[in-house]
Amino acid sequence: MRSRKEKWQVAVLEILQASEKPMSAYDVLGELRNANPRIAPPTIYRTLSYLVEKGRAHRLESLNAYIACKNHKHDKSAVITICEDCGAVDEYVATDVLKVLSNVIAHSGFATLRHVIELQGVCENCGFEQTSV
Image 1 (spheres, rainbow, N blue to C red):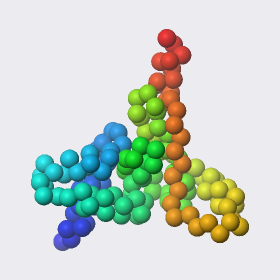
Image 2: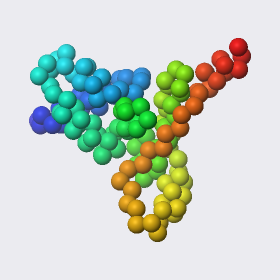
Image 3: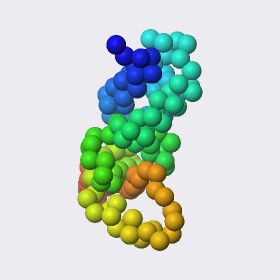
Image 4: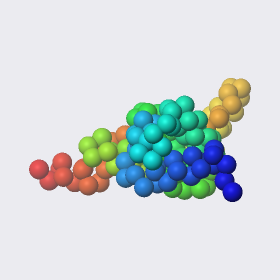
């Protein structure tokens, strides 16, 4: 039997997985409020934090939004591409990026807690449309 906390984690993750676009915490809250009108924002923020900490979701700093993690190779760095035209978001695993970045800061005393690399630009579909106009 799942605890209340686990039920929220499953529900929030399912919402993120079903979404085609990144979602803010309030977007997630809106989805959950239909069935749970008394749910409060702190519950959503705590749940999203937990999912990010456990590698089940990514927080997109530049968009202040969340997406479900598609790759479960957490010893690798997630590289997220964000199309500024259509909003499409894709996730890639960069095998050596984390190793290179770790070497760069190795002697600085800085301790990395999480790593997500966001690249903003134009996706192939939108780029093609722009060049064919």
